[in-house]
Length: 454
Image (tube, rainbow, N blue to C red; front, side, top):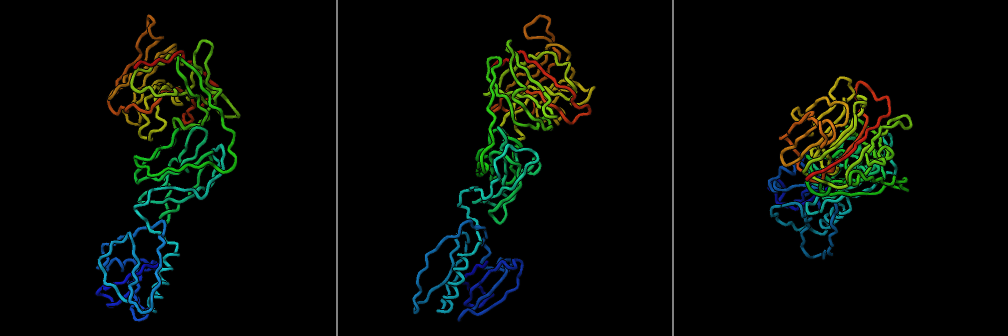
Protein backbone atom coordinates (compact mmCIF):
# COMPACT_ATOMS: atom_id res chain seq x y z
CA UNK A 1 0.00 0.00 0.00
CA UNK A 2 1.53 3.37 -1.04
CA UNK A 3 0.80 7.08 -0.85
CA UNK A 4 2.66 9.45 -3.14
CA UNK A 5 2.84 13.22 -3.32
CA UNK A 6 4.70 15.79 -5.35
CA UNK A 7 6.90 17.86 -3.08
CA UNK A 8 9.49 20.58 -2.84
CA UNK A 9 10.72 19.33 0.55
CA UNK A 10 14.17 20.80 1.00
CA UNK A 11 15.61 17.50 2.21
CA UNK A 12 14.78 15.91 -1.16
CA UNK A 13 15.51 16.79 -4.75
CA UNK A 14 13.61 19.84 -6.07
CA UNK A 15 11.55 17.66 -8.42
CA UNK A 16 10.59 14.63 -6.39
CA UNK A 17 7.76 12.22 -5.79
CA UNK A 18 7.47 11.10 -2.17
CA UNK A 19 6.30 7.48 -1.93
CA UNK A 20 5.21 6.45 1.58
CA UNK A 21 5.07 2.68 2.08
CA UNK A 22 3.62 0.76 5.05
CA UNK A 23 5.81 -2.27 4.38
CA UNK A 24 8.11 -1.10 7.17
CA UNK A 25 6.11 1.62 8.97
CA UNK A 26 8.81 2.32 11.57
CA UNK A 27 11.62 2.81 9.09
CA UNK A 28 13.24 6.23 8.74
CA UNK A 29 15.57 5.08 5.94
CA UNK A 30 15.09 6.90 2.67
CA UNK A 31 15.55 5.01 -0.57
CA UNK A 32 15.50 6.57 -4.01
CA UNK A 33 14.93 5.77 -7.65
CA UNK A 34 14.48 7.67 -10.90
CA UNK A 35 11.03 8.01 -12.47
CA UNK A 36 11.72 9.40 -15.93
CA UNK A 37 13.40 12.75 -15.31
CA UNK A 38 12.01 12.95 -11.84
CA UNK A 39 13.42 11.77 -8.57
CA UNK A 40 11.35 9.36 -6.37
CA UNK A 41 12.00 8.98 -2.66
CA UNK A 42 10.55 6.16 -0.56
CA UNK A 43 10.25 6.62 3.21
CA UNK A 44 8.58 4.71 6.06
CA UNK A 45 5.63 6.13 7.95
CA UNK A 46 7.71 7.55 10.82
CA UNK A 47 10.06 9.11 8.35
CA UNK A 48 7.12 10.68 6.56
CA UNK A 49 5.86 12.17 9.84
CA UNK A 50 9.22 13.87 10.40
CA UNK A 51 8.99 15.81 7.15
CA UNK A 52 8.24 19.43 8.00
CA UNK A 53 6.00 19.77 4.98
CA UNK A 54 3.53 17.21 6.35
CA UNK A 55 3.57 17.71 10.12
CA UNK A 56 -0.13 18.59 10.13
CA UNK A 57 -1.23 15.45 8.28
CA UNK A 58 -3.39 12.82 9.97
CA UNK A 59 -3.93 9.30 8.66
CA UNK A 60 -7.24 7.57 9.05
CA UNK A 61 -8.78 4.41 7.64
CA UNK A 62 -11.26 4.94 4.80
CA UNK A 63 -14.14 2.53 4.38
CA UNK A 64 -14.90 3.20 0.73
CA UNK A 65 -12.33 4.33 -1.79
CA UNK A 66 -13.65 7.08 -4.05
CA UNK A 67 -13.80 6.46 -7.76
CA UNK A 68 -12.19 9.45 -9.50
CA UNK A 69 -12.60 10.20 -13.21
CA UNK A 70 -9.39 9.99 -15.25
CA UNK A 71 -8.62 12.59 -17.91
CA UNK A 72 -6.66 11.73 -21.03
CA UNK A 73 -3.20 13.30 -20.88
CA UNK A 74 -2.20 14.98 -24.14
CA UNK A 75 1.44 14.43 -25.12
CA UNK A 76 2.60 18.05 -25.32
CA UNK A 77 1.02 19.53 -22.22
CA UNK A 78 2.67 19.81 -18.83
CA UNK A 79 0.50 18.26 -16.12
CA UNK A 80 0.88 17.72 -12.43
CA UNK A 81 -0.02 14.37 -10.88
CA UNK A 82 -1.14 14.83 -7.30
CA UNK A 83 -3.62 12.44 -5.62
CA UNK A 84 -6.17 14.52 -3.66
CA UNK A 85 -6.78 13.06 -0.19
CA UNK A 86 -9.84 14.61 1.39
CA UNK A 87 -8.77 13.58 4.88
CA UNK A 88 -5.18 14.90 4.59
CA UNK A 89 -4.55 18.54 5.32
CA UNK A 90 -1.52 19.40 3.19
CA UNK A 91 0.48 22.59 3.14
CA UNK A 92 0.73 24.04 -0.34
CA UNK A 93 3.26 22.00 -2.33
CA UNK A 94 4.86 23.14 -5.53
CA UNK A 95 3.56 21.20 -8.56
CA UNK A 96 6.11 19.21 -10.49
CA UNK A 97 5.78 18.78 -14.27
CA UNK A 98 6.15 15.15 -15.33
CA UNK A 99 7.19 13.93 -18.73
CA UNK A 100 5.40 11.22 -20.71
CA UNK A 101 7.19 8.38 -18.89
CA UNK A 102 6.62 10.02 -15.52
CA UNK A 103 2.91 10.46 -16.25
CA UNK A 104 2.56 6.79 -17.12
CA UNK A 105 4.34 5.78 -13.91
CA UNK A 106 2.16 8.11 -11.87
CA UNK A 107 -1.02 6.75 -13.47
CA UNK A 108 0.09 3.22 -12.72
CA UNK A 109 0.67 4.08 -9.07
CA UNK A 110 -2.69 5.89 -8.94
CA UNK A 111 -4.54 2.87 -10.30
CA UNK A 112 -2.77 0.64 -7.77
CA UNK A 113 -4.15 2.76 -4.96
CA UNK A 114 -7.66 2.71 -6.38
CA UNK A 115 -7.67 -1.06 -6.68
CA UNK A 116 -5.93 -1.79 -3.38
CA UNK A 117 -7.78 -3.14 -0.37
CA UNK A 118 -6.70 -0.25 1.88
CA UNK A 119 -9.40 1.67 3.70
CA UNK A 120 -9.12 5.13 5.13
CA UNK A 121 -11.54 6.30 7.83
CA UNK A 122 -13.84 9.15 6.95
CA UNK A 123 -15.32 11.08 9.82
CA UNK A 124 -18.28 12.14 7.67
CA UNK A 125 -19.53 8.53 7.37
CA UNK A 126 -22.54 7.70 9.52
CA UNK A 127 -21.77 4.84 11.98
CA UNK A 128 -23.31 1.60 10.77
CA UNK A 129 -23.00 -2.17 11.29
CA UNK A 130 -23.59 -5.08 8.94
CA UNK A 131 -23.36 -8.86 9.42
CA UNK A 132 -21.22 -11.11 7.23
CA UNK A 133 -21.44 -14.32 9.32
CA UNK A 134 -24.67 -15.20 11.11
CA UNK A 135 -25.16 -18.27 13.36
CA UNK A 136 -28.24 -20.48 13.11
CA UNK A 137 -31.45 -19.75 14.95
CA UNK A 138 -31.68 -21.81 18.13
CA UNK A 139 -33.30 -21.73 21.57
CA UNK A 140 -29.77 -21.32 22.95
CA UNK A 141 -28.14 -22.61 26.10
CA UNK A 142 -24.81 -22.46 27.95
CA UNK A 143 -23.18 -25.14 25.78
CA UNK A 144 -24.26 -23.94 22.31
CA UNK A 145 -21.76 -21.59 20.64
CA UNK A 146 -20.92 -20.46 17.12
CA UNK A 147 -19.11 -17.62 15.32
CA UNK A 148 -20.61 -14.29 14.33
CA UNK A 149 -18.90 -11.56 12.30
CA UNK A 150 -19.41 -8.42 10.29
CA UNK A 151 -18.28 -4.94 9.28
CA UNK A 152 -18.53 -1.55 10.96
CA UNK A 153 -18.31 1.79 9.14
CA UNK A 154 -17.81 5.29 10.49
CA UNK A 155 -15.64 3.91 13.29
CA UNK A 156 -13.50 6.19 15.46
CA UNK A 157 -10.50 5.16 17.60
CA UNK A 158 -11.43 3.34 20.80
CA UNK A 159 -14.90 2.28 19.66
CA UNK A 160 -15.88 -1.40 19.97
CA UNK A 161 -18.70 -3.84 19.26
CA UNK A 162 -21.07 -5.24 21.91
CA UNK A 163 -22.95 -8.40 20.88
CA UNK A 164 -26.22 -9.86 22.15
CA UNK A 165 -28.09 -13.11 21.48
CA UNK A 166 -31.80 -13.37 22.22
CA UNK A 167 -33.19 -16.39 24.04
CA UNK A 168 -36.96 -16.18 24.50
CA UNK A 169 -37.70 -12.65 25.78
CA UNK A 170 -34.21 -11.77 27.03
CA UNK A 171 -31.10 -10.44 25.27
CA UNK A 172 -27.84 -11.83 26.69
CA UNK A 173 -24.49 -10.07 26.22
CA UNK A 174 -21.95 -12.15 24.26
CA UNK A 175 -19.78 -14.09 24.38
CA UNK A 176 -19.69 -13.87 28.21
CA UNK A 177 -20.74 -11.32 30.81
CA UNK A 178 -17.09 -10.77 31.80
CA UNK A 179 -16.07 -10.36 28.12
CA UNK A 180 -18.70 -8.06 26.65
CA UNK A 181 -16.54 -6.26 24.06
CA UNK A 182 -15.43 -7.33 20.58
CA UNK A 183 -12.54 -5.47 18.95
CA UNK A 184 -12.79 -3.97 15.49
CA UNK A 185 -9.85 -5.18 13.40
CA UNK A 186 -8.33 -3.37 10.44
CA UNK A 187 -10.62 -0.42 10.94
CA UNK A 188 -13.81 -2.23 9.95
CA UNK A 189 -13.98 -6.01 10.54
CA UNK A 190 -15.14 -7.72 13.72
CA UNK A 191 -15.63 -11.36 14.69
CA UNK A 192 -16.49 -13.18 17.92
CA UNK A 193 -17.92 -16.30 19.44
CA UNK A 194 -21.52 -16.19 20.61
CA UNK A 195 -24.04 -18.41 22.32
CA UNK A 196 -26.90 -19.31 20.05
CA UNK A 197 -30.23 -17.52 20.02
CA UNK A 198 -33.19 -16.80 17.81
CA UNK A 199 -31.88 -13.30 16.99
CA UNK A 200 -28.52 -11.54 17.17
CA UNK A 201 -27.66 -7.90 17.75
CA UNK A 202 -24.47 -5.85 17.36
CA UNK A 203 -23.95 -2.42 18.91
CA UNK A 204 -21.17 0.02 18.00
CA UNK A 205 -20.27 1.75 21.27
CA UNK A 206 -17.92 4.42 22.54
CA UNK A 207 -14.96 3.69 24.75
CA UNK A 208 -16.12 3.53 28.38
CA UNK A 209 -19.63 2.28 27.58
CA UNK A 210 -20.88 -0.20 30.18
CA UNK A 211 -23.33 -2.66 28.57
CA UNK A 212 -26.10 -4.41 30.53
CA UNK A 213 -25.52 -8.14 30.95
CA UNK A 214 -29.15 -8.83 30.06
CA UNK A 215 -31.88 -6.69 28.58
CA UNK A 216 -35.55 -7.15 27.81
CA UNK A 217 -35.20 -4.38 25.20
CA UNK A 218 -31.94 -3.56 23.42
CA UNK A 219 -30.23 -0.25 24.25
CA UNK A 220 -31.15 2.47 21.75
CA UNK A 221 -28.77 4.79 19.93
CA UNK A 222 -27.50 7.45 22.33
CA UNK A 223 -25.70 7.49 25.68
CA UNK A 224 -22.59 5.85 24.23
CA UNK A 225 -24.33 3.68 21.61
CA UNK A 226 -23.50 4.82 18.05
CA UNK A 227 -25.32 2.19 15.96
CA UNK A 228 -27.49 -0.90 16.46
CA UNK A 229 -28.07 -3.78 14.02
CA UNK A 230 -30.33 -6.80 14.56
CA UNK A 231 -30.63 -9.94 12.45
CA UNK A 232 -32.53 -13.21 12.77
CA UNK A 233 -30.60 -16.46 13.07
CA UNK A 234 -30.23 -18.58 9.94
CA UNK A 235 -32.71 -21.31 9.20
CA UNK A 236 -36.13 -21.95 10.69
CA UNK A 237 -36.70 -20.44 14.10
CA UNK A 238 -37.42 -22.86 16.95
CA UNK A 239 -41.00 -22.95 18.20
CA UNK A 240 -41.64 -19.92 20.41
CA UNK A 241 -43.24 -20.16 23.83
CA UNK A 242 -46.59 -18.39 23.92
CA UNK A 243 -46.56 -15.64 26.56
CA UNK A 244 -48.62 -16.16 29.68
CA UNK A 245 -50.42 -13.33 31.46
CA UNK A 246 -52.28 -13.66 34.74
CA UNK A 247 -54.59 -11.25 36.58
CA UNK A 248 -53.79 -10.60 40.21
CA UNK A 249 -55.07 -7.87 42.55
CA UNK A 250 -56.54 -5.87 39.67
CA UNK A 251 -53.34 -5.82 37.58
CA UNK A 252 -51.97 -7.78 34.63
CA UNK A 253 -48.73 -9.67 35.22
CA UNK A 254 -46.46 -11.34 32.65
CA UNK A 255 -45.07 -14.75 33.71
CA UNK A 256 -41.38 -15.33 33.03
CA UNK A 257 -40.19 -18.26 30.90
CA UNK A 258 -36.62 -17.22 30.10
CA UNK A 259 -33.63 -18.24 32.21
CA UNK A 260 -32.09 -15.74 34.64
CA UNK A 261 -28.89 -15.10 36.58
CA UNK A 262 -30.77 -13.52 39.45
CA UNK A 263 -28.69 -13.47 42.63
CA UNK A 264 -25.68 -14.73 40.69
CA UNK A 265 -27.32 -18.14 40.21
CA UNK A 266 -28.40 -19.41 36.81
CA UNK A 267 -31.98 -20.68 37.01
CA UNK A 268 -34.62 -21.83 34.55
CA UNK A 269 -38.18 -20.53 34.81
CA UNK A 270 -41.40 -22.32 33.95
CA UNK A 271 -44.75 -20.74 33.06
CA UNK A 272 -46.51 -23.47 35.06
CA UNK A 273 -44.88 -22.25 38.30
CA UNK A 274 -47.06 -19.13 38.62
CA UNK A 275 -50.86 -19.08 38.84
CA UNK A 276 -53.81 -17.66 40.79
CA UNK A 277 -56.35 -19.73 42.73
CA UNK A 278 -60.11 -19.34 43.06
CA UNK A 279 -59.71 -16.79 45.86
CA UNK A 280 -57.47 -14.62 43.67
CA UNK A 281 -54.24 -15.31 45.57
CA UNK A 282 -51.00 -15.65 43.62
CA UNK A 283 -48.93 -18.84 43.90
CA UNK A 284 -45.22 -19.01 43.10
CA UNK A 285 -43.42 -22.35 43.10
CA UNK A 286 -39.97 -23.92 42.76
CA UNK A 287 -40.48 -27.33 41.13
CA UNK A 288 -38.28 -30.27 40.13
CA UNK A 289 -38.09 -30.83 36.37
CA UNK A 290 -35.79 -33.21 34.46
CA UNK A 291 -33.35 -33.45 37.33
CA UNK A 292 -33.10 -29.72 37.99
CA UNK A 293 -35.08 -26.89 39.58
CA UNK A 294 -37.40 -24.52 37.74
CA UNK A 295 -38.45 -21.24 39.31
CA UNK A 296 -41.18 -18.59 39.08
CA UNK A 297 -41.38 -14.87 38.37
CA UNK A 298 -44.10 -12.39 37.45
CA UNK A 299 -43.76 -8.74 36.45
CA UNK A 300 -46.29 -5.98 36.16
CA UNK A 301 -46.98 -5.11 32.52
CA UNK A 302 -46.69 -1.36 33.18
CA UNK A 303 -44.52 1.02 35.17
CA UNK A 304 -45.96 2.67 38.27
CA UNK A 305 -43.02 4.81 39.37
CA UNK A 306 -42.98 6.65 42.69
CA UNK A 307 -45.54 5.59 45.30
CA UNK A 308 -46.25 2.96 47.95
CA UNK A 309 -46.03 -0.76 47.09
CA UNK A 310 -47.67 -3.28 49.45
CA UNK A 311 -47.26 -7.10 49.43
CA UNK A 312 -49.23 -9.39 51.76
CA UNK A 313 -47.64 -12.84 51.98
CA UNK A 314 -48.62 -15.95 53.92
CA UNK A 315 -46.27 -17.82 56.23
CA UNK A 316 -42.69 -17.96 54.93
CA UNK A 317 -41.19 -19.89 57.85
CA UNK A 318 -41.10 -23.13 55.82
CA UNK A 319 -38.71 -21.72 53.19
CA UNK A 320 -35.45 -23.66 52.96
CA UNK A 321 -32.23 -21.63 53.42
CA UNK A 322 -31.47 -21.54 49.68
CA UNK A 323 -34.97 -20.50 48.54
CA UNK A 324 -35.33 -16.78 47.78
CA UNK A 325 -38.59 -14.78 47.64
CA UNK A 326 -38.16 -11.22 46.36
CA UNK A 327 -40.48 -8.23 45.90
CA UNK A 328 -38.62 -5.64 43.84
CA UNK A 329 -38.56 -2.94 41.19
CA UNK A 330 -36.46 -3.49 38.07
CA UNK A 331 -35.76 -1.64 34.84
CA UNK A 332 -35.38 -4.21 32.06
CA UNK A 333 -33.82 -1.62 29.73
CA UNK A 334 -31.52 0.27 32.10
CA UNK A 335 -27.79 -0.24 32.43
CA UNK A 336 -26.28 -2.66 34.93
CA UNK A 337 -25.51 0.32 37.19
CA UNK A 338 -29.02 1.75 36.98
CA UNK A 339 -31.69 -0.95 37.11
CA UNK A 340 -33.75 1.26 39.46
CA UNK A 341 -33.78 -1.68 41.84
CA UNK A 342 -35.32 -1.67 45.31
CA UNK A 343 -35.66 -5.07 47.04
CA UNK A 344 -37.46 -6.81 49.85
CA UNK A 345 -35.61 -10.14 49.96
CA UNK A 346 -36.81 -13.06 52.06
CA UNK A 347 -34.07 -15.69 52.29
CA UNK A 348 -31.23 -16.97 54.47
CA UNK A 349 -28.98 -17.23 51.37
CA UNK A 350 -27.99 -20.83 51.88
CA UNK A 351 -27.08 -20.63 55.60
CA UNK A 352 -29.25 -21.86 58.45
CA UNK A 353 -28.45 -19.10 60.97
CA UNK A 354 -28.69 -16.02 58.72
CA UNK A 355 -31.41 -13.39 59.12
CA UNK A 356 -34.29 -14.15 56.78
CA UNK A 357 -35.34 -10.66 55.58
CA UNK A 358 -33.41 -7.86 53.87
CA UNK A 359 -34.23 -4.34 52.70
CA UNK A 360 -31.89 -3.37 49.85
CA UNK A 361 -31.19 -0.35 47.69
CA UNK A 362 -28.92 -1.69 44.97
CA UNK A 363 -25.99 -2.09 44.76
CA UNK A 364 -26.16 -4.38 47.77
CA UNK A 365 -22.39 -4.49 48.41
CA UNK A 366 -22.43 -0.96 49.84
CA UNK A 367 -22.91 -1.55 53.57
CA UNK A 368 -25.29 1.38 54.04
CA UNK A 369 -27.56 0.04 51.27
CA UNK A 370 -29.09 -2.88 53.17
CA UNK A 371 -30.76 -3.74 56.47
CA UNK A 372 -31.09 -7.33 57.75
CA UNK A 373 -33.46 -8.74 60.36
CA UNK A 374 -35.48 -11.85 61.20
CA UNK A 375 -39.19 -11.83 60.41
CA UNK A 376 -41.55 -14.15 62.35
CA UNK A 377 -43.84 -16.88 61.05
CA UNK A 378 -47.37 -16.08 59.94
CA UNK A 379 -48.91 -13.56 57.57
CA UNK A 380 -46.67 -10.55 56.91
CA UNK A 381 -47.26 -7.26 55.12
CA UNK A 382 -44.14 -5.88 53.46
CA UNK A 383 -44.13 -2.44 51.85
CA UNK A 384 -41.95 0.39 50.64
CA UNK A 385 -42.79 4.01 49.90
CA UNK A 386 -40.62 5.39 47.11
CA UNK A 387 -40.24 9.11 46.52
CA UNK A 388 -37.47 11.32 45.09
CA UNK A 389 -34.39 10.94 47.25
CA UNK A 390 -35.92 8.55 49.80
CA UNK A 391 -37.43 5.09 50.20
CA UNK A 392 -39.08 3.88 53.42
CA UNK A 393 -39.34 0.08 53.97
CA UNK A 394 -41.70 -1.50 56.47
CA UNK A 395 -42.69 -5.00 57.65
CA UNK A 396 -45.84 -5.54 59.72
CA UNK A 397 -47.11 -8.77 61.28
CA UNK A 398 -50.59 -9.60 59.98
CA UNK A 399 -52.69 -8.16 57.18
CA UNK A 400 -53.06 -4.39 56.80
CA UNK A 401 -55.95 -2.83 58.71
CA UNK A 402 -56.41 -5.77 61.06
CA UNK A 403 -56.43 -5.25 64.80
CA UNK A 404 -53.29 -6.39 66.55
CA UNK A 405 -50.96 -5.73 63.61
CA UNK A 406 -47.51 -4.77 64.89
CA UNK A 407 -44.49 -3.28 63.19
CA UNK A 408 -41.60 -5.73 62.89
CA UNK A 409 -39.15 -3.34 61.25
CA UNK A 410 -38.93 -0.01 59.41
CA UNK A 411 -36.04 1.74 57.75
CA UNK A 412 -35.59 4.83 55.55
CA UNK A 413 -32.80 5.08 52.97
CA UNK A 414 -31.81 8.53 51.72
CA UNK A 415 -28.61 7.81 49.77
CA UNK A 416 -28.29 6.32 46.30
CA UNK A 417 -32.06 6.28 45.71
CA UNK A 418 -32.80 5.55 42.02
CA UNK A 419 -34.95 7.90 39.96
CA UNK A 420 -38.24 6.39 38.81
CA UNK A 421 -38.73 5.75 35.11
CA UNK A 422 -38.94 2.54 33.08
CA UNK A 423 -39.08 0.30 36.16
CA UNK A 424 -41.79 -2.27 36.86
CA UNK A 425 -42.58 -4.16 40.05
CA UNK A 426 -41.81 -7.88 40.11
CA UNK A 427 -42.12 -10.90 42.37
CA UNK A 428 -40.06 -14.06 42.09
CA UNK A 429 -39.18 -17.28 43.88
CA UNK A 430 -35.87 -18.88 42.90
CA UNK A 431 -33.04 -21.14 44.01
CA UNK A 432 -29.84 -19.59 45.36
CA UNK A 433 -27.20 -22.12 44.29
CA UNK A 434 -24.17 -20.75 46.11
CA UNK A 435 -25.00 -21.35 49.77
CA UNK A 436 -23.83 -23.96 52.23
CA UNK A 437 -27.18 -25.80 52.35
CA UNK A 438 -28.55 -26.70 48.88
CA UNK A 439 -32.24 -26.85 48.09
CA UNK A 440 -33.73 -30.31 48.67
CA UNK A 441 -37.51 -29.98 48.28
CA UNK A 442 -40.05 -28.28 46.07
CA UNK A 443 -41.53 -25.20 47.72
CA UNK A 444 -44.47 -22.86 47.23
CA UNK A 445 -45.36 -19.36 48.45
CA UNK A 446 -48.81 -17.69 48.47
CA UNK A 447 -49.14 -13.92 48.06
CA UNK A 448 -52.58 -12.79 49.14
CA UNK A 449 -52.59 -9.25 47.85
CA UNK A 450 -50.68 -6.52 46.04
CA UNK A 451 -51.58 -2.84 46.41
CA UNK A 452 -50.20 0.39 45.01
CA UNK A 453 -50.85 3.94 46.25
CA UNK A 454 -49.51 6.93 44.25
